[in-house]
Amino acid sequence: LQTLRGVDLIVAVTFATEVGDVSRFESPRQLMGYRGLVPGERSTGETVRRGAITKAGNGRVRHMLVESAWTYRHPPKVGARKLYRLEQAPPKVREIAWKAQSRLTARYRMLTGRGKRTTVVCTAIARELTGFMWAVAREAQAIRL
Image (cartoon, rainbow, N blue to C red):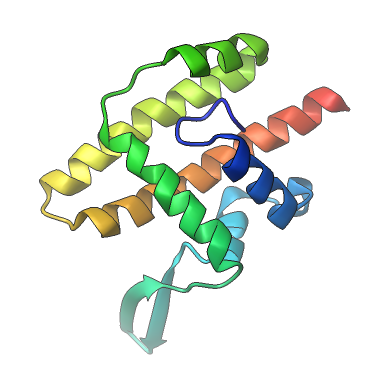
């Protein structure tokens, strides 16, 4: 998990202990819903209203993910500390980490360019970051087995 930008020891350990075994989630969407990072919906008939995030699950983990998302406002690059972590990681995990960094920085720029508030943008980035964390954790479990 620490190969991802914005995810260091505290965030990785908190995520791992709160989520537990990621194989119980069939898709990243299920994990995002479990973390409370999906928009709420109120619908009647043909009318669909989407609102703020549902805030289900542990608020501490959600807060840590949103704080981690702030690092994606900077252009994609690999620093010295992350380079060491990436060198230790399997190639598939490295690929996921770079894809996450490229996609999330571009998404941050796109959403802020549309005029979205930065707090809303970081919540959206945290949601996608959760999906990438799911992918890295699943890959790590597959390697261990």
